[in-house]
Image (cartoon, rainbow, N blue to C red):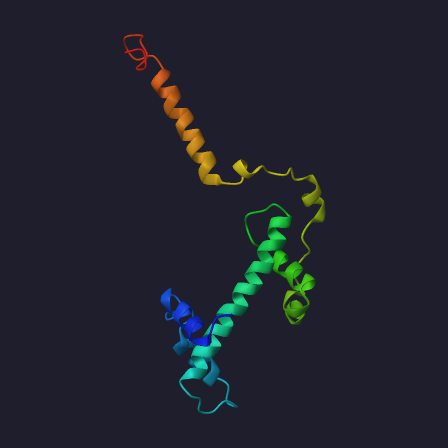
Length: 150
C-alpha cells in the first residue's frame, strides 16, 4: 500500500494534475452567481473543478461504452441517455434527456461487426494510399515502361 506522500508525489509528477482542465476562476464565477453562496476559500473552486472534471470523465466513459456497443464512432445525446439509464449513479440526469429519442436497437442488430483492422480510419486511409502509390509505380510511363521495370 502506498503512503499518502507517494500518492501526492505521483499525481503531481505527471504535470497534468497541476493544470486544471476546467479553470477554477470560471467555476468560482458560476458558484458566486448563486446568491445563496457567500465567501469561499481559494481551495473550493479548485476542488469543484476537479470534481466536475471527474464527473465529465465518468459520463463520457459510460457514454463511450454505449456507443461501442452500437459499433458507432460518434457519441450522441441518445447514447448519453442510455448510459444514464444503465448507470444508477447517473439516473438524476434522466429528466434532462426527456425529449431525446432512443437509440435505434434495430440498427445495432443489422450492423456488421468490424474486425480490429477495420476500426481505424487512419489505417484504412494509409492502406488505400499505399495501394495507390503501388499502382502509380506499376503504371506505364510515356515510354510504355513502368517505373518499377527500370
